[in-house]
Image (cartoon, rainbow, N blue to C red):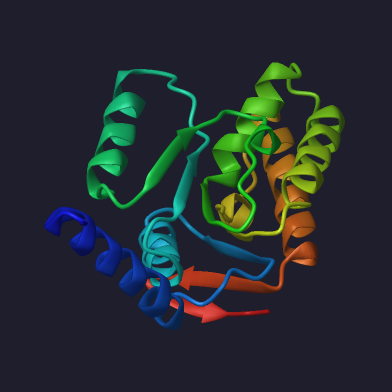
Length: 196
């Protein structure tokens, strides 16, 4: 004889199996790049999109904590996300995580590139090669990838050599991801504009 708890669990499981696929279709391999300026609504849009595709998306946070102000910024981002998220903190090696069949939000490419850039002593070429190779390894998985990035080169040219070198590296990486992406969304004042 089955307990009432087991019967409720069984019914809930059957309901989940037969109802959820209608709301959340099976994951297909897709790369979506979401780009824009600071405070353009990139992360908020990407989070809403991920939650519309899966009840439990994966959040890959690439930030390295540089100072106290940045730690507080990270905490604000973490508090905005609810318990439905599977949170993974990873600075560079995204491909170490097997996330086949998942909806994955990577926030963000700029901080991810920063980690390569500084670890490789501001060598633009080496950082770009390393980031591209890791992107290729990571996106070889059968999953849906939502990459959030910044258009940091839309302002004036910096008088700081390191900033100019990083802007170049970031711009080339954005172009690489966009070329490989199925869709590219440009965020303008909170409004998503599909450009690919």
